[in-house]
Amino acid sequence: MCGIVGAVSERDVQGILLEGLRRLEYRGYDSAGMAVIDGGRVTQRAREVGKVASLAEAIETNPLSGHLGIAHTRWATHGEPSQVNAHPHMSGDRLAIVHNGIIENYQELREELKAAGFEFTSQTDTEVVAHLIEQYYRKHSNLYDAVKAAIARLRGAYALAVVHADEPDHLVVCREGSPLVIGVGIGENFIASDQLALLPVTDRFMFLEEGDIADIRRDAVSIHDREGMPVERKIIRFEHGSDSAEKGEYRHFMLKEIYEQPAVIKATMEGRITDTRVLEQALGTDAANLLQDVNHVQIIACGTSYHAGMVARYWIEELAGVPCSVEVASEFRYRKHVIQRDTLFLCIS
Image (cartoon, rainbow, N blue to C red; front, side, top):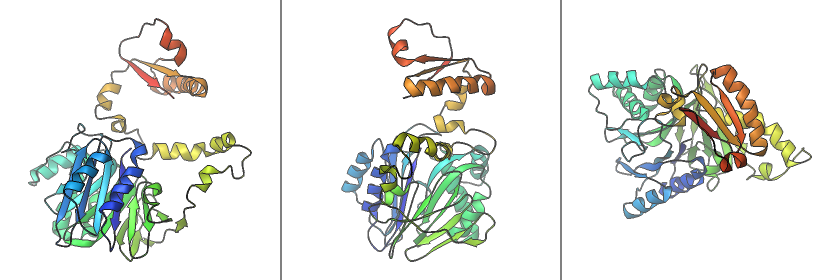
């Protein structure tokens, strides 16, 4: 899943954003990028295919200096891994956006925006959101109102962070189906898709709830819920991993992990499902086309993963109506086997 980091501060934010991206590398990604607004109200952007280290090399050569910025690691869902498809995306040369999740109605919005004169440089659903917000910005001349109007048109799962060079003192964020957290500092504030990205700069966090939209400045955070009512989200102090390193109330770690499963499953599904369906693009750019051709599922696993696969076989055959086989990986590896055409392999480790 993609990763988001953002900051509005009295100090230069390039280093904060870069370290945040490094801490999100565990998520898996194919490109990384950053946009920073400088004191002259210019939006600077750098994007690189590959690892965060490649982005670090690029901005070491051409630094992005400023007190407001957003950054992103991308896992391709719409369009191949490439520099033009990497985040942040921009509309014009002033508005920049990063996005986690999948916009289901991006194609119809894309056609509408093309008819309105917007030009597209990528294959992503994210660029659609950038142009949509810019379209509303031209009407409202206010970034918060523009984002609020734009998200009312979106269907799917998303976490968004938006900045505009004409308003260089704040960023606007929102979430629907994808997690987003605000890191609370002193004279500075931050956002990320995971609080672990922000531990070098703060240990106090506010977790946005479904439908929240927030306006974040150096010295203030205002949040409104789905109905547009102002709300306060509790500030929680993060204990630097002590909760994951200790057994707590449980007799042993395995028991703790068993009881953590509902929360882990929920976190895994965030940004990948809506109320009615799975967002296939979360599995890869061509997943929807590939999945419709699957005639058989082969699960390969060992130990408890094998047992999980045996349960999955019942679900796959009952819910998807597709035949499924499960085999111990060490056996499968060394024997001769015959694979049916159009078989999807699910390898569990």
